[in-house]
Length: 109
Image (cartoon, rainbow, N blue to C red; front, side):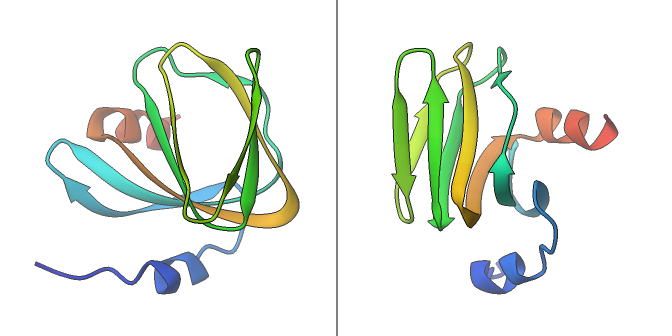
């Protein structure tokens, strides 16, 4: 059993749209990500996606609606929903949980 200091781990992320895996939970990885600027439309057909904003704020846009997600708030994007992430106020940090299989595919691509 080992504790993880999220703020310390986030301070090691120096570039936008970079992430690091900080732990594992059953068949999932726990990942921290640093975002800034606009991200292109994307869609995840294989799983729901959980976005927990640790710091900053983020606008999540979809065809159905737009939602501001603030620090301390959580959003679950259902699989198959096309959406776009945008961070207008600078840097935003996320905590995400995703299946190990998907994390391994992202590292290889």
